[in-house]
Image 1 (cartoon, rainbow, N blue to C red):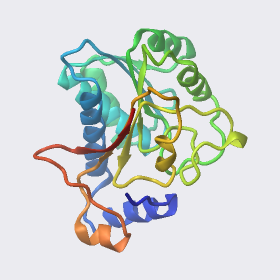
Image 2: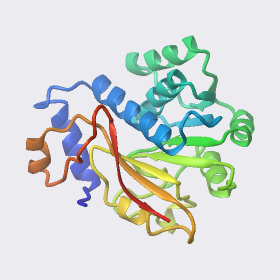
Image 3: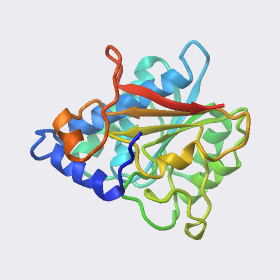
Image 4: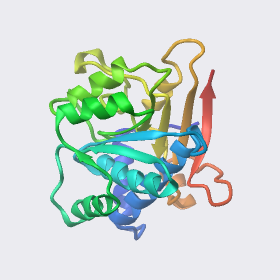
Length: 245
């Protein structure tokens, strides 16, 4: 499997929205649908699932908002979307409105986050994506601490594109503060360099699942930036590319 850098990921996004003819709305919708499908593959709806979505202030958070809508429509109980720094643009306010009309709770207070975390069985980590650098600060640091301290037998975590708090090219960097390792990772467009650390971390007996999603890349773009487009099956928007027991 080939991995791309943060700089390459940014260049690919830029080209998708220029020569590729996509809008940010389209890419976010397809990315969020990919995340929702990955959650379904990890935890099928036949089992009772209470989902908490952690949405950051950027496009990764937007992917989380879209995923929350699709998961609700799939039949999951979305007990909350933690979205404390709401982005005031037409795209993001529209995503908020869609969730409110479905009666999905939007959470902003630390106490609300803590209560929802205690109740949920699956967390979607959509706080920070490939543009993140440095240390996670308030109000998102509490979410990272809850993810670190979770009981893995009760709370499953799926991260969107990269585990929040990781350096996109290097993986967990102790100098940048506390980090966590999710149970599933959904790499969008192509796996980032830090994704290779995902399967290396953890303890024996844990199951790690790695998906690639975002079914919007053409072969010419993949060839130009030297990465692989996975073989999607049927109407699936994600492909599981590796796992570890």
